[in-house]
Structure formats: C-alpha cells, structure tokens
Image (tube, rainbow, N blue to C red; front, side, top):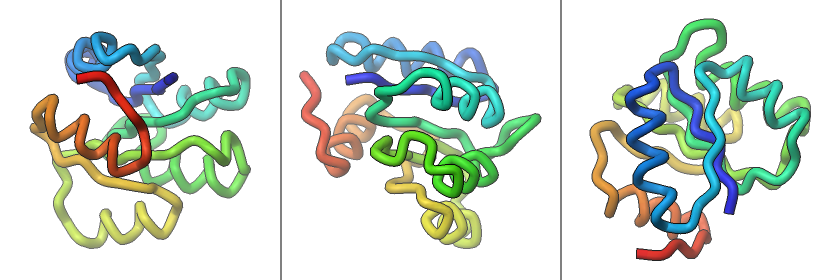
Length: 124
C-alpha cells in the first residue's frame, strides 16, 4: 500500500509516517496541495492521500477539487486530516471528492479504523 501524506507541518508528516510504516505502508510526503498534485501526476499508484485542509500555496479543498476534476489518480482515496470541524469545510471537501475525514489530534487506532472504513487492510 502506498500513501501520500500532505501537510505543511513536517512534524505531522513524520508522526503519520511513523504510524503507517509499521503497518507495512510505503509513505511519500508533500508540504502543500500543489506539490501533492505534482507528485500524483508524475507517480502513479497511490492508494490513499492523507490531506490537510489548511496549508499555504494550495489548501486541501483546492487540492482535492483539482485532483478529482483533472482525474489525476481517480482510484486514490482521499482522507482529509484536519483540525477544522466546521460543517462547511466537511461538506465542501465531500462535494469536491474527499472520501473520509479524520480529526486532529488522532490516535493510531482512529487512523487504522478510518483506513479500514475505506477498505484498506492494515497490519495492527
């Protein structure tokens, strides 16, 4: 399984990587939505994108919208990982093509649970 972790915080990217690697997940990273789109347009095969909402250059809403409109990696599931609990952002993200939401801060168990909800089998 390949996951693209998109967050402007290097700390969050490292934290998520440290959670996923023991589950057998191969991780790539991007610091904003624009970099994430560049990566998925040149590298095929991402199963999941973990996408922060609030980032510089291109935020998560813009990224998921462009990802889906441009049909870049159409099979890639997108999970928004954010502190933003406002229904407006949740509805917009789902409208633009996000598949699931995970609220920060989160536990390893909640991440694993959300991945299972998306149909991924991950090692405990």
